[in-house]
Image 1: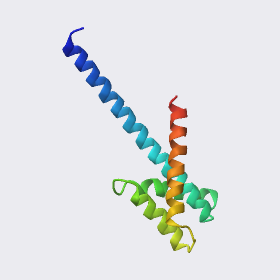
Image 2 (image 1 turned 180 degrees about the vertical axis):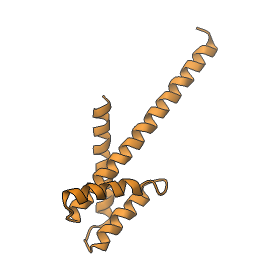
Image 3 (image 1 turned 45 degrees about the vertical axis):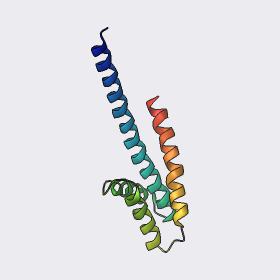
Image 4 (image 1 turned 135 degrees about the vertical axis):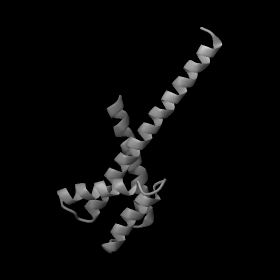
Length: 111
């Protein structure tokens, strides 16, 4: 195999891995946001159907801007609006823990 072909093959493999990793990251973020929405819905004492709808709202909140601050503000704002005493630390810790759970679920699903 000539060096140019080897280089092109390595470049393609790297690009494929990068695309795969980005897709996994996107899926894990969406899964984490859904789980976070369900977590918050439980605190908000929402019924099952309302919980699912709220979780979808949280997933959609992540599309507003890069990063996760939009998701945090959505959930924290909704909890504060209901006068629930849930600290910033608790919400951020839930986000962190649920990201780990989401990554585990995604990895198990993709094998």
